[in-house]
Image (tube, rainbow, N blue to C red):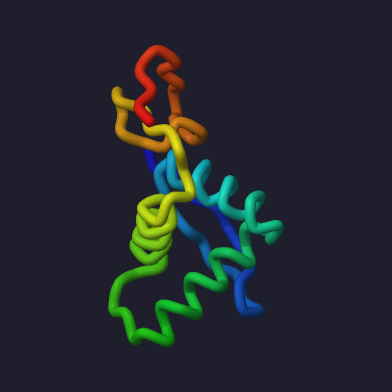
Amino acid sequence: MLVKRSLSISGHRTSLALETVFWAALGQAASEDGKPLARIVADIDKLREEHDEKSGLASAVRVWLFHRYRAGHVSQWCQVCGTPHDVCPTPHDNHIQS
């Protein structure tokens, strides 16, 4: 399910619709990096603009999270839903893969 939130980035208000698992992963990334969630999104938006990406902000966030987790920011994956165990929307404790 998509969840829409309003954020202030680069001095303007915008809304961003992401699935709950992506909001959870984004919140975890912000916590790990010691930055507010809006700052993480603003950084992603800036990277998107610097690389002249034509995709929308929501897609850019998903791709950024994919690369972050692919780079090893997670040690356990849920075998049931395929998400990082720490952000699994319905933790499946018996189905963890390292």
